[in-house]
Length: 608
Image 1 (tube, rainbow, N blue to C red):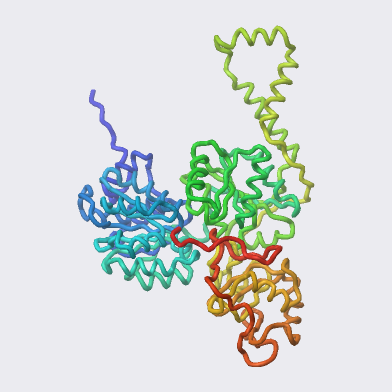
Image 2 (spheres, rainbow, N blue to C red):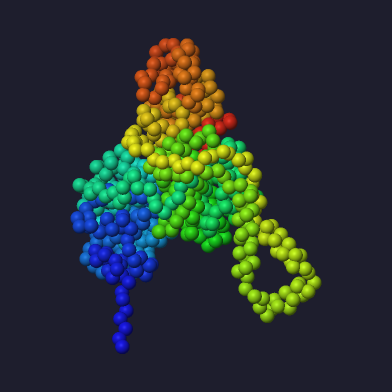
């Protein structure tokens, strides 16, 4: 009898390059995701592509498949590397390094040699890797620009450029770097833009640097991720951390990712969880690259089970067995919500996404869910009784699953049974088990009738996602989350800085720092948010004489500004500062007022 061995790669579409098909089969791929299938359609193999796809949909493999015919040019394997044939640009170090790992195994059979150029790593080592030769380079915009400027990266033979998470790169202020890199590449190359959304900035970039780009939408924008269950957990405003602790204790997930708006919040929550006995690590922009890599490795090898992170720091990371994402702060726009939540429910695995929502923020959370076209179940935080019942079940299951004693244990087990009663043994076991588990927190109950937040059918307008943690819709839009937006006639050209803008804004309208939300500095003006219940009084206060310095004007966003005060419209005040302007926090969050009116964070490093 003859046996036939079936080739596992035969189940994949014929359009997949044979070298890549065998690599996919070895990784257990029996079918491709929608975005990966879209890359193989007729007419896409040589075209520039503008692709929008759901987070966690397999984008890295997708663009690996898309550029394979271009890079290999009909060959089965790559030849000796000289100048790079392909370039992938990513917004963060972690995402760039993850992309390299994915492409390494995908192109392993084809004999690819890759190199990374990312901020925070030794540039000399990167230069040596480029000198040895690489078929494909993966990097962050600032570091890639550095290498091109210094002559260590030659793009003269480039056949394909991929911009991964292009919308995020624009949000982080990398547009100038991207334009520099694309201008240095040969005009005949293919350009592929992958983006979760296609706002105006992405459309303009595509129009400038792509040729007759084919628009690819891998999934309908109204389709909710089937593998993610969304929960809106209502809590009292002073019990948010209690709810986070109890949610972790009530979860079956092997690991969890918690998102906070600011680095300070990450530090505080990490310390709180560590004190409660959780194996927890932190990811934020203030950490060195070695610390961030160590934290991710601890999550991957199981030494840590909880990661607390800011949005930018966790951008693009893929953690194994991540079944739970917790939003410790309500996401301020739908894209942030979707990007955060997309860390779970990947590769066919189920995941749970929990929004911890103080009662007074329920409306804002519901609006963000609705704008993201997501449905969420409203529920209270798990209580002590629920978690203790869960502990009892787990302890009983542990005891029932224990195998019989082996030869080395038998004599001591007999001694225990002889000297102790069953009750004493059971009590000792119970206490040992409970001591190894964190004690749940006591949350005051909130009366919640079973309900679901369902998405509204409406058009989103005027979106602007330039900072991850700021309310990001333009003030003229109808869906603004947060307070009322005003503008002041000072911007980057006047070296506007939140540490002196904030006192000026408060004094002009007779409000305190706690009434001011996000501060967004543009070239010639600054937008800032005033709490909704203070907005009318603020506008009224602005009409009083002497509320502002000469030549400075404030108005509601969208209204014409008139200078308050006396004299010609000329700014002569102190705020024109000498020295370098501070650009914003390095983790990508918007400026927020603090108790001392000082901005938080350091200037962002454009090298990723």
